Structure formats: C-alpha cells, structure tokens
Image 1: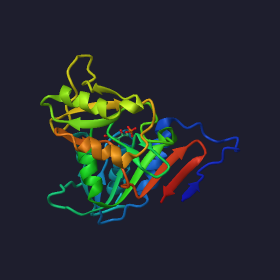
Image 2: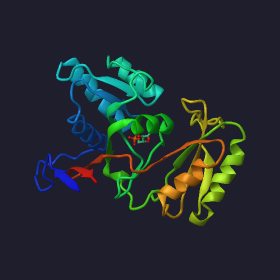
Image 3: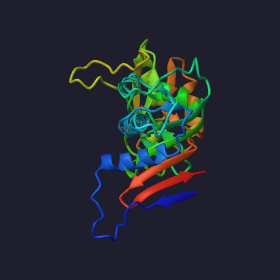
Image 4: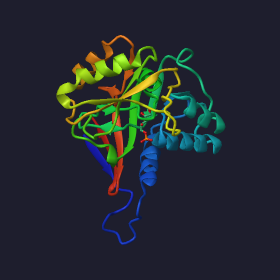
Length: 253
Ligand code: 5RP
C-alpha cells in the first residue's frame, strides 16, 4: 500500500528545486512524525538517518518531544546524538525498542532492503530486529526492482582472520549472478581495509544480475564460518518513506 503526501505541486510555478539532501530531510521529517514522547528509539546511521537525529535533537530542545531515549547503531550516530543532548542507552538495558528509523541503500517492491554501505549493518540489524516498528527513510534513488540491482555494493561483514578465503567463497556463492567481491578500503587513499565499529572487515558484493531469492541468498551467506552479518534486511521494514521530486510516499505492506 502506498500513500502519497504532496508537500508541493509539480505543476506549480513555484515548485522548489529540491536537492538530494532536501529529499532526505523531507523523508526524515515525515518519519519523525511517528515519534512520541517516552519512546525508546533505534537511531540509524548514514546521511538520511542523520537528518532524523538532527530533527529529534531539535524537537527535544524545544520541548515538543520529551523523555525519549535512543539506541545508536554506530559510533558516528552515538557522537551526533550525544552532541544534540539526546539521552542514550543500549540494547542490554532496553532490549525492546518502540521504533527504529534508518536509511537504506536499496529498497525493493516488497520493502526488502540492502543496507550497510555506511558500514553499520551489524548494529543496525541488531537494533532494527529488536524494534516493534522499523521505518526506512530514503530518497527515490534507492528504489530497485530487485535487490543487488543497483550495481552498487551489497556488504558482508566478515572477521579479519582469513578474510580473503571468505571473499573468494562469497564470490563463488553468486557466480551465476556475475558477482564480483571486493574488500572495502578505509577510503583515505591508502590500501588499508575499512574496519567496522566491531573490529571486522567488509566484503562488498557487486552483482550483474539482481538476487532472485533474498532469503536463500542470506542463508547461504550466513552459513559461511567467519561471516558476521550481511546487508540483506528482509521482512524487517514496517514502512518505507520515499521522498521524490513529486512528494513523499509512505509504502507499507
Ligand atoms: C549504513 C546504512 C545506511 O542507512 C545506508 O548506507 C544509507 O545511507 P545514506 O542515507 O547516507 O544514503 O545502511 O550502514
């Protein structure tokens, strides 16, 4: 089911030209409308989730929200939330989360997702699996007809020990889909690997053909010893808020 909200009309002469950041913020603001005082919240990671955290900080500072407590999904989000005076806790202290809000890298028509290009997939999956509701916020560039179909990375977090062995095994699992596996680098121009908040590496999988059965693929990946978590988030999102040039759409199952 899709509900469309049109904050502006595309026919209007005065329709604003929206940047991708504007779209991310529109989706974030719409999602924060679901936050109520007193909630335990899962706080996502990434540029779209950062707009959610900003908005929560703003609503707390004006008193429009009170008594919320957040569980961050990365050190980055933890720092941002702390700088905005958002009270924080952990899954150990609060194992039941009312609502998690997070971005995604790919969203398919079943509301299944690829996540983790920001490297936070493990904590995101733990927090979002513990949430009664999980709202995804994204701009419309994230919509795909099949997972793995964007041609961008599908991340798998692996232990550092013999990562190459696992990279080869992961690539081998998806030979039929023309899969290419690459170790993620730190991105500082060096050849140093990217290290997650959990001290692990990430192998990014690139598919020529989208994954046909996400559940089967997820099972096969998880069965490899040394794989910590994969970026397929299947059957987890309760709704997806997509912002595009013509408005904000809320997709629910
Ligand atoms: C981080 C994630 C992010 O939610 C995902 O990468 C989307 O990020 P952005 O909103 O910056 O496009 O999964 O691990």
